[in-house]
Length: 312
Ligand code: NAP
Image (cartoon, rainbow, N blue to C red):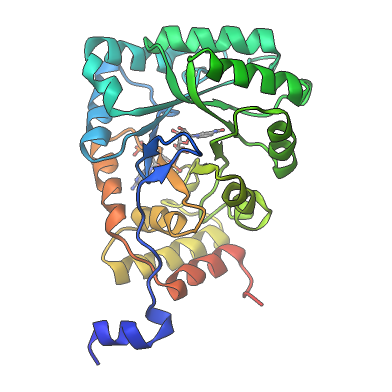
């Protein structure tokens, strides 16, 4: 039987929907189904420019940074935003080609401050470093449990009404924290950014992805390759997950890294993996993931390996 006929008749071969451009909440802003992240950026502004061009030219237009990126435990707060700002000042046309996401609210060594006064200063400092009038998506990096969510909501609403920010979101928030903050917000949250990968599957069944679908939050997956551990697996579980990805990668004619991105993207919440590589060739290679079509069977094989126990 030919493969295309088999696909019509065998439910194991039913393919999941292809990744498409995603929408940032109700803002009308659309983003690529893959993002590029700058956490590991430690080169020069020229290096940043090369990676940024690689991403944009490959169709990856959601660019993720944070005010703390560059911090080495002693100094460097704001450095990565500063380098990106230098690139954008030198090539102003680039800004229009990207959806720019940054984050604030981590204040080493405090470690967190999300008071209205601090966040207002942090946002202005990010805008200055980035050399832009507006940030497309501003995320609260990690929850500060000492700030009342009503105060944080006030800051986020003001950030949008002042025109400094187009959309707001959170990162590393629990389901309850998202729910509570949302109750105080006039502007609905547009995005959430948890750690998700085939090595960290909790958001898939702890309610986070369900909440993202219910509230129309764009889920951005940080460390989609487990921070690189998926590429050099050490523990028995990591090796089993890598082997499951390799098996599907072979069927799809792709690599383990791209299979990991594709696995995340096949979830109905519209998960956007943030590519963490700072190598232009890997960023370009990653963009080919949009060609992938997973079957349900393939997806559940990886999920089962990630769970480590069979599904009921
Ligand atoms: P990742 O994709 O899980 O890991 C990237 C690492 O894997 C890099 O060191 C990369 O090295 C390595 N790698 C090895 N083989 C690779 C391959 N074939 N393709 C791609 N990478 C390969 O992502 P991450 O860097 O940990 O995180 C991604 C982004 O998520 C960050 O840049 C940041 O924007 C965001 N993030 C957010 C939070 C948060 O709290 N919100 C936390 C962490 C990260 P090379 O660079 O040498 O390719």
